[in-house]
Length: 178
Image 1 (tube, rainbow, N blue to C red):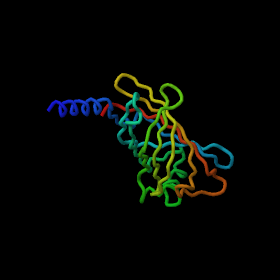
Image 2: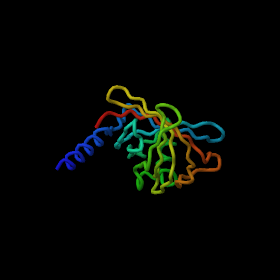
Image 3: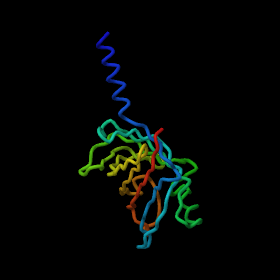
Image 4: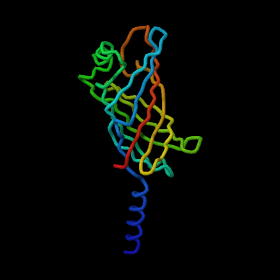
């Protein structure tokens, strides 16, 4: 009986150390930059949802499961945005979400920095990626910041030869306790 009580206490203590957070869409930003004709084109997405289990002391116990609404793509040009939602680009009719699911989170090289590895899925195509990020705690909330690069062709996102294959994505995810 004593062993069972100690085991239950250990499990409850371990589970309590990992806090669950939900992204706050209105306070978060998902921005991207891609070169077209040699000029940087900036855009963003909204509609971020998901669950972040995060323990800054033991990041290996942490996880992220994030979804972004692909239909919210915004480059401040309505005609271009409509084009980006079409079949040749994000095909939002058939693939309404962009999804990231972590497989592991590790300590970074500096205090407060981490590396999350997982699968990014766009248009039904998944690719393993790693995102270096920082986690800044403010009371019961966190701000997760990171940036990474992807090749649009890895996900079947079209375009002409004037558009760079590589784009940079910057994240600023504000999350509150779930």
